[in-house]
Amino acid sequence: MRIIRTKDYKDLSRKTANILSAQVIIKPGCVLGLATGSSPLGTYEQLVEWYNKGDIDFSQVTSINLDEYRGLTHDHEQSYWYFMQKHFFSRINIRPDHVHVPDGANPNAEEACREYDRIIEEAGGIDCQLLGIGLDGHIGFNEPADAFQMGTHCVRLTQSTIEANKRFFSSADEVPREAYTMGIRNIMQARKVLLIASGEGKAAILKQAFFGPVTPRVPASILQIHQDFTLIADEAALSEIDAMK
Ligand code: F6R
Image (cartoon, rainbow, N blue to C red; front, side, top):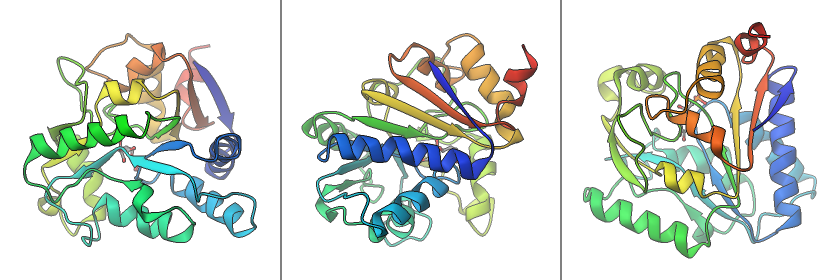
């Protein structure tokens, strides 16, 4: 595990975008595993800026997003599909047929999840997976559990995640209760994994996930044993790890 320390969120976003753009330049037809949420917004913004300057070309890239709320269609403003279009895909030259997000509109969970595993496999696996981390240690929507879930699956969101995500909806009642998410195997099979975290709010979970035991109770902790895992975090997010020294 490598740790890249950044001064603040802006610095974190630039360094993360740097790694992703290097990946695209080295392998123009690469497969990027992408995340939604607040953490990657600055990274997408930076990549769009470099795209506009002509420094990066996404025309051969395939993207595979981590997760989607079950029951939300593409045109729902809180769907992760909508989020990715708004903040990233509609602003770069990625081919629409190269963009993948689990099909939240498919009520058949088994079918939606098997289909997503097939998409990942047919793409040849993920070259570089970008992750955020939930306050309970979730990655994608892999919530704390008794065992690591392997492939794409349907999850019931925990109260902590519903609380954290309600800021995007008019009320907590509006937050969908279930989601489709890539599993831990899908994430661990990515050739390179980046996890980004910013702000004091993430300090305790970073210490627990990366300096505590590997356990499905803290799903992100499994990344400790990934062969090419980089944590990119700002000083505030690293404060509890620093305090251990
Ligand atoms: C998003 C995702 C989630 C978020 C996590 C952190 O696709 O899979 O695991 O990465 O909830 O969210 P933020 O970045 O909003 O703190």
